[in-house]
Length: 107
Image (cartoon, one colour):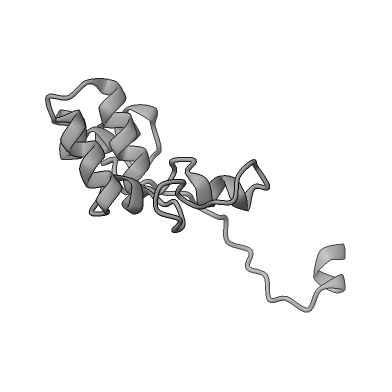
């Protein structure tokens, strides 16, 4: 009751309920989370696991490229050393002159 007097909030006497819509019982379980994650076509693709994880990180913008390292005060200036533009995932992997040459070499 001390919180109710200190803060001018309208509080309810109802209990909070956590529900997990991915399970028929509405309760969270690791197995339902795993099954939900595995429904993505990426995880079913016939690729090495390292490649799947890299693509998953790329799609979620989680690869530590120049701009992200710079945001965390890491080394470098966040620029692509070949093109002098901000180093992002799309810049590294998609249409740029240096990336095209690199991808041609990799193929």
